Image (spheres, rainbow, N blue to C red):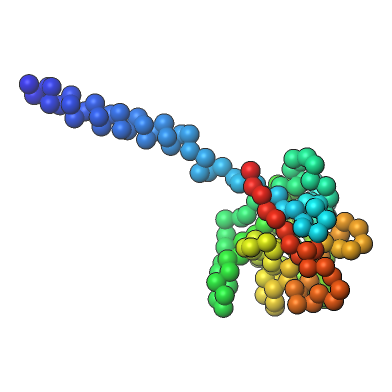
Length: 171
């Protein structure tokens, strides 16, 4: 009788442990989520080079790694509005999307992820905002080709508002 009691306790506990082990091994929690960002104005995607620090917008008609980005693990929350910023990392080269806030039209490139102030991005809503430490600037496309820049959003000066809109989709 005692062994039957032990068996009734051991079997369910063993099955539970087995199911937890199987579920844990099939979990995708540790898998990286890759994002593609499509510009609302021209329908092109944010692209980075595999061999240089160049970043531009180009067609979205394939699934090349140059069009894939992922959010780094480090983050911080901006005090005055609660927006969370992370590094946006290119799958193509492993470097972070980078900009500066030197002018009203700032270059965008990739560089090794580190403590550069121009590497903290937020994808909240339908914009890509970079907190450079001085002010926030927003990624936009250019009216003359496939270039991308960051510009303070308040500085629109004839620039179509859709150039600042980026729709993110993940895989």
